Image (cartoon, rainbow, N blue to C red; front, top):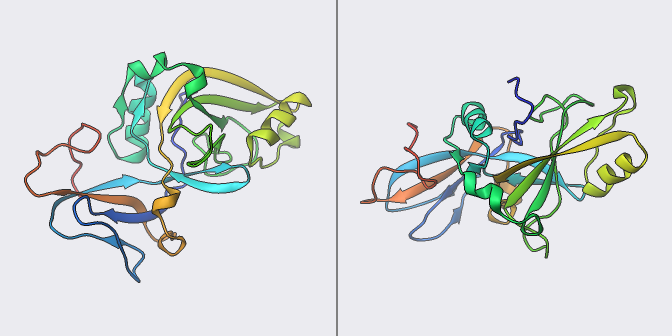
Length: 211
């Protein structure tokens, strides 16, 4: 991937099954089972940091068409191009910071995973994120940063630069839906089900991928 703005917060990990009709059931196999279902959709989970902690997301929309296409190819799941997201006021958005260099890792550019400014329950949380890129001035002085404050401090110290891209993405955090025991390295997606009788469209409006 060669684009400057790929925002697929990428350690793919974990699996859920969500029953839209009868609720959730945790099992020993770390999958939430469902009943009375007809169609199954695998949605990749992605990982980032927030205030020093790991958090997990799903990816549904981007205000930038090229980014939406790249996310779709990267995740194997249809991500919508949603241009109206770019019109949402900055005050209504959370922030995401994606690293373009530094410590090698599972982030979208091959470096550390992104950092977000808030999680569900925080007064400043929104699933809609404004994407910023963070670039170390001297790659040899780079280190893993796990909070927005760490990033802002590094910028203040002239260790890195931050670029506001103007791109808005929809990445709802789903940590509260996942018991700790259900997150493993052996599975790689959130599995959601659609009750029998609904039309063959995915939950984000695109065609359901084949399972």
